[in-house]
Image 1: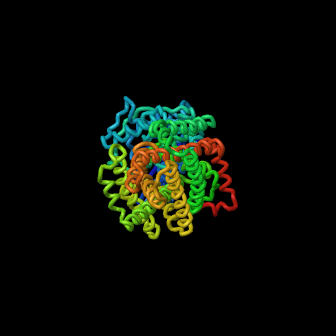
Image 2: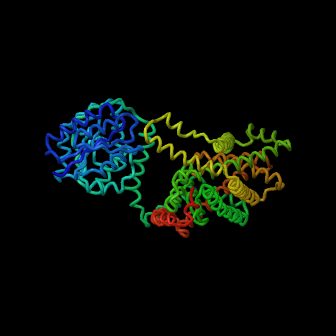
Image 3: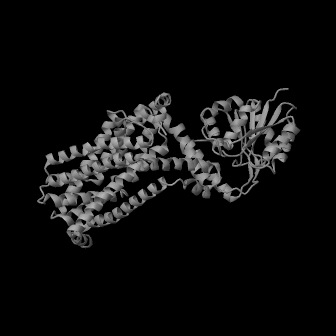
Length: 611
């Protein structure tokens, strides 16, 4: 007779229980299946105990038993897939080797699929009729996990991780074409995708007893499983809905929200009132000067990506920078940067760790450059004996109200951010020169699960890309020089805005005050109290201009408002133009990513484009 049912036992270091599990499995199968119609496959996943030897002995003893060995650890899902590929039956079954699920349910599990009534069957510990002895330390996390899967992945099942499942061979083959996880999330992803594909899935109650003393694993359960839920949710629920119409609508909405927030945090009437005292032509000149910095931002980002092995078009990257900065005006804590990481991932298949590493490098250079500018002015003030005036202004009450308080808060924040930037650069440079791996040992202290390797790999790629740029002297000079020019332009814009108010101040002190005010204000808004960082920037700008020049608080505050408004308007217009003219949108990114990936893989210069 031919084999109809293949039972796979995933085994990793199961020397103590494997023999008993196999004997129980064989006797249970024999109770409802004819001889020769079933097989038991021991999926031994790179064990380092006596499990391989025991598996060989069992295979030699029983004709229905086979041992499938893997030299390297494949993970729970990977080991199951590897064994199922070699299975002979049309009904594929697996359950945990600890036999936590009572084996009296095996016949129902097998026959649910073997009969053709269902494509997938799974035991459940969370149905009303289930009898599961679950300690709180396992039950609470499990309940929360399953609730999250139902909420985010729209599953109708109560229990996704019970190790007691059966599949129709053809059905599983179709599902595995899209399943990406190869470890603990494998069970969940298969069940969720089966439901989405319209397959008949049976969930039935089982009697289950905990057989071990497992505990919540921070890396596996939070970072590993959590990231897989988010990834699957994006693939199944979000990505298919990103049509061209949705993308254009979302992009327009992003710009609209950014404009709307400007009217909240920059009162239009206050801006207009401030501009009445300013020369409109000089304000327009300031906007044009600021627009010049954006192509430089795109070129700088191109150089950062090139340093880590990705050569991209300047136009695309300038548009991506515009769009992400527009998002930063809407979302706090610079969350808009994630849009840029997504664009370069979808357009050119740049991995997310590398995308975010490139953003981190850009931020470090920004902070370091601004800190350098602020520190240079501070040294100059000390050399000219002007620190006393600055200290008096900061500690006195010459500027009261919200502006004075915001300015003093901004100075404290700016000092902390500056110090943090210097320390971050020191850490990056030190670790870049060391051959020691600091990431994996730290992760291993938190977890011994295979997901720890996955998480460590992501962090190592991120840190490695940052260190690559730090260790590249040519990249350091190019990116550092571009950063300096970009922020000199930013300061020049503020100075032009100040001049537009017809202030009677000598050029040298005006330039020095402008450098210090913009640098400190920009450092302060790294921790925005509101989208766009409105508040701290104006406070620091006003306080320092008043402290270092004869300019009054009203004019200084007006200049700060106009300066910030000019920069925000240029950013929003550039973001809108990038989406409309450069066709840089989430939809385009998704649509072109397969072609881009194929182009990269087939390019004769592919090896030179990547590390």
